[in-house]
Length: 512
Image (cartoon, rainbow, N blue to C red):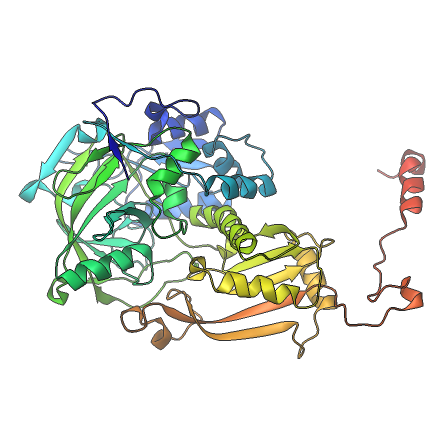
């Protein structure tokens, strides 16, 4: 729900002031911490820009702003800059969340766990910088934007990578802001991957049932809080603008779109408006695409297409996009976003389900949350199964939590060697330490899933077989005197008194 105020926002209270909540202020914050590189040398939008982004990820080179893109600016070009890689590290995420750059991972998770549950409604203002230029009808041409052809196997120029897609539930009027992929297929058309089980897919189903086209707006560039929350599974019925306001400590100033009944951030860089028709005759070929899994996702299919009716943008706009695809050693923005948000959302899910003893939840960026590690203080046998059951029954599990690994308090969930050690010596193959859960709803983008099980138009989602690995110490052994009366062998960690002695004399040993 939103409220209307005259032209200006007024006093928004403590926190980030609304006029600071945009992409440009975020870039300034990153630049102040040495986390932005501006590339002034000419770079081609066709594959070169995406490859530069990949190599930068491999070297943790910070966020990138390209300002000299082949063919842009030109007299008819409406945009000449591209910003990417802004969220591709926990350090940059901390800066953009308004935290100390060196905030430890567990504190980042606790931060999103807290603020995901808060709400601060947006305000509708009369106008804003995104209305500096308004283009409608035949004057709309998406190729006037420097949209990269990110990867050589992509089916085309993907304009929706980190674009925030705004739709509205026609029944209750609540808007959703999500991240869904889309490829330019014409001067004024964007073909999109529509998954019915996602929030906008539910909106789409309602508009289709009415036989009406669905209004849609795509926002390319605002404060990265939008990217973080639009790319996270906020509960149905909750508008992401409300959560963004809570994170920023100020209501999000919105302006009404020109041709659709939707609102977008007043200080956004670029907004594209239009409709998606339910008529299959309007569908366009989309794909393939280098997805967040690190693989080319699927085969091209005819999919719903957005017919663009309006383009608005601010003076000298910056196009916001991202190179998808997690690879060992070069995890991207979605990876780090998911690393923090998917852990926080999982923690909230476990608490809400009443699962006891949760000590830490960790998602390694390279998995995007497809694998999640939960550290518990084990209180009973079957405790790990409670963890998996709660996660797998949540809506957030659509693309995530395929593998759930549960470990004890003495195992660092952020250390893969510790996890491997726990699996090696606390897991018994053939027992219920490893549990398979077949035929669950799941990701249609997982390359290990047969194509027949990825038919979202027929199944509503992909189909997954999920796995729990219970890497905790069992309570089933009889206590043994040789184990100090405990029912699982102790580790070979030195005795505390021995360790105190050695550390107290360390300088005497002459060890460098």
